[in-house]
Image (cartoon, rainbow, N blue to C red; front, top):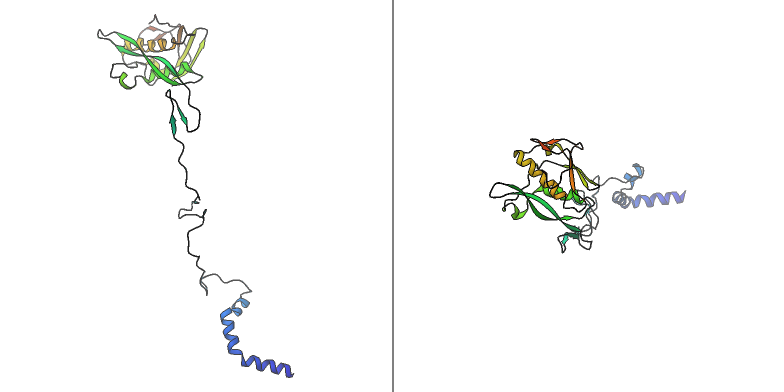
Length: 232
């Protein structure tokens, strides 16, 4: 009994200090809150981060992760001798010179094939590449010299293959429409036939439209059989 009375007297004497300690530690609040932590802002201030820059790999205002290293620009093509290009440290693109025919009109008004050279990427379809270069027409000063292509620019090559000594070239239907009349039709055929027969294994050319053989192009120009440089 004397022990209990002594403890009670000690508690009573130190009660002010006990109250102050309970307020500072918020022991009663934690006790009646089942021991859960109070959220920042409710009775206490959230701790501020230490000053200094954000660590590598943090997110910026847009939410995108910052990289610790700056982005490197893509490697630019490096010009190489012969007209090809290559990525830095990579092999050069192989090119080949092809003879292509455009059209020129002489002083007497005659429409004649005009020979030009093109440096083209080396590929598995050289005939098609050369014909497409003919469709694209003059480059640089060639136009100033009066050179032109009379193949309708909308015409597309659907296929180009060689069987025996004959090249079979299939065009889209746009090949059928030439605004220059009969001379225009004859000229576009010359461009195709003369360009194709520059290849040593091609002696003549069979023109196809959408893969089909037609008898005539435009105003009665025969295309029902393979054509060589003597016709039209």
